[in-house]
Structure formats: C-alpha cells, structure tokens
Image 1 (cartoon, helix red, strand yellow):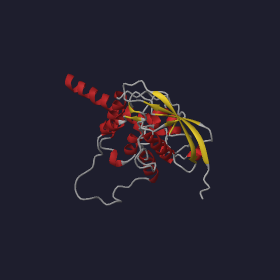
Image 2 (image 1 turned 60 degrees about the horizontal axis):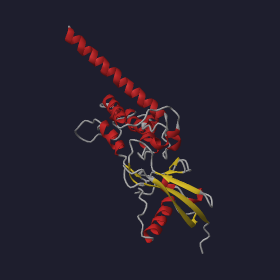
Image 3 (image 1 turned 180 degrees about the vertical axis):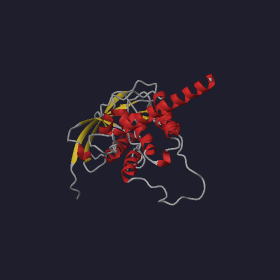
Image 4 (image 1 turned 30 degrees about the vertical axis):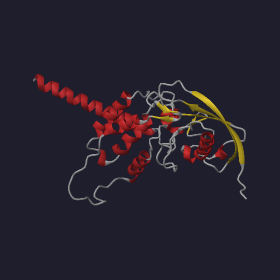
Length: 266
C-alpha cells in the first residue's frame, strides 16, 4: 500500500478562448491529490476529470517535463513557476502546497506575450530577439583543435551560466514592467564573453536590444524580480553586461558616422 500523503485543494484557473476574449477564472475542486504528484500531473488528472464531464479541457503547455525546455510556464498563486525557487512548473510537486489551499493559476501577463488560449501564450517574441542577434562568426576550413583557442575558465563559466537560460519567460512575467532584459542579456552575454562571439559582437548587441524594444517589452528598473523568478538562476549582472555592450556599439556607430561625415565634408 502507498504511504504517500493526500491533500484536498481548490483551483482558480484562468480560461480564455482566444486573444480577443476577455477571459475569466473558473473554479475546480480536487480531492485526494497525492503530494508526490507533480503539478503538471495534477493538471493532467484535472483535465481527465473535465473531459469525462463532457467539457473542454484546460489548455497549457509542456514538453520535456525535466526543466529543460521552458514551455511549462505558469503563474501559480502570483509566483512564476510556483513557490519553489530554481525550479520550473514541471519540477514543482504538490507537497509544496497545504491541505485545503486555494491555488490560482494564470498565464504569463505581458503585452508581448498575447494569450492564445487559457494558459498558453505566444512567446515568439523571444525567438525574434534571438534571430535579430544572428549567428556567431567563424573561419571556414579544417576543424580547429579543441585547445587552439584558449578561454580563461572564469569567462567560460560565466558564459555557460548565461547560456543556461531556457527562454521560459518567467523574468518577463515576474517583472512589473514586463521587461525582457534578463533574457536578452543572457543571450547577448553568452557570446560577448567568448572569442567566438567577437566578430559580430557590436552588431548583435544593438540588433537584439532594438528588437526587444520593438516587441513591446517594458524597461528594466533593477528591481531584481527577474533573477528571483528565473528557474535557472540567471544573474541580473548580465543586464549590466548587455547595457555595456549596447553603449559600446552605439558609441562605435556614432564614431563611424562622424568620421564619414568628416570625410564627406573634406
């Protein structure tokens, strides 16, 4: 016999047919929920119950369910991915909740993340920011030896820490301004610290920051909510690096423009 603890919970879940629908909260009761069950398994169980009643199930996203893909993005009782720090929604277990607790489940709330249906949002704005950064520059020819380009360990470690970003959007959802600065900074920093990213360094920083603003994300106020909500604990220091990269690129562009004007007037 299983000795797993069971709890009863109440759920307030956001339901919305499409982007234009005003949306509403719908309430559900769940009894005898195993505390060893993951949050998404609980949602699966709820959907089975809804389908048996002949109603439309709740739409939410998930893929790997291993904290890798970043698709399981839910705002749970006001916290991105739920109450456990350093974990995605799929890594959240029902033992984090109390018997009789009311759990509110919402999608990410941001202008740049329009709701598709229920808890599913359109996060292609992140894809467009990454595409604006382009590719890394590399010489063609025979494959270089692994040790041919030496990289200091501290820079390699910092670049890897930035590259851990899974693009889930928790930083945007947690930020009062719906800023994408932490995401964009992580994607810029992972290349800016490495020699492989040097050829397109200035162009990458400018293009990605400009695309971020174009998508309608808010500005950064250095509140730190993004860092606290990030399931991969991406450091807010990356935003400083992003701003430095952007300003250096802007100054270089202004200098080139000034030199061109001077030559044209000579």
